[in-house]
Image (cartoon, rainbow, N blue to C red):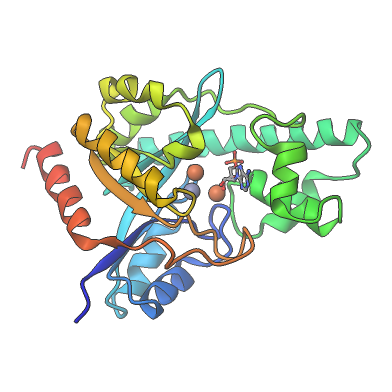
Length: 279
Ligand code: AMP
Ligand code: FE
Ligand code: FE
Ligand code: ZN
C-alpha cells in the first residue's frame, strides 16, 4: 500500500472554488488522498457538508479556514486547522468580514466602471454562484467572461492584483487579530503560501503573535522554495503544512493532487492541537 497523503489547502464553491464540498471529497478520494482540509476564505459553510459526505467515502475532512488579514503593504492569508468552527461568536465575526468583502467588491467595480468598464455587482454575484464570500477571483472570472482579459492571471496583473490600479484594500483584520481568532476557536494558525506574500521579515512577529506553522508546500512553491521554508519552519520551531490551494477549475486547471504531503504531518498537527487544548 502506498503511504497515506493529505492536501491541506482546498477551496469549495462556498468561497471562490468551483467544487461543491461533496465534489472536493469525491475528487480527493479519486486521486487517493487520505485527508483533505477545507480552507475557504472567511467562511466555514463547506466543512459540515464535506464531513457528512465523507462518512461513506473514507476521506478524512479536516476543518479549516483561510482568513484574510492585511497590513499597510499586503493581504496576509492565515490558515487555521482543526478549528472548532461552530462557535457563535466566530460565525458572527466571519459574517461581518464577508460584509466588508462585499462592500469592497462594490468599490472595486465602481472604480473599474469609472475607468470605462461596464460591470455590475449583480453580474458579479451571479458569476460567484452559491458563495456568500464573493471575491477577486470571481471578479477576474467576470472580466474573462466579458472578454476584458484573456486569462485570469492577466486580470490580476493588469487590474485587480494587490499592486494593480483597481485593487481596493478591505478588511480591517490585522494578522494579530486573525491569529488570535484562530487560537480562540481552538485552531492552529499557519501562514499560507509565504512565497506569494513575500514578507519573510514578518515571520518573527507572526510567531510572537502566536503563529504555529508555515505552509511549506504549495503549488506555487518550487522545490527549492519549499526547502527554504522547511528550514525557516525548523528555525522557528513551527509546524509544516502543505496544500494545493485548489479552486476547482476556478483558476484554469484543477490543482488538487499536485501537492500531496505525508500524513505524518497531519499527525503532528493533531498532537499540537491536543497540546493547544491542554489535553
Ligand atoms: P480576495 O479574497 O477577494 O482578496 O481574493 C483572493 C483570491 O484571489 C485568492 O483565491 C487568490 O488566490 C486569488 N489571487 C490573488 N492574486 C492572484 C493572481 N495573481 N493570480 C491568480 N489568483 C490570484
Ligand atoms: Fe481563493
Ligand atoms: Fe490564499
Ligand atoms: Zn487559498
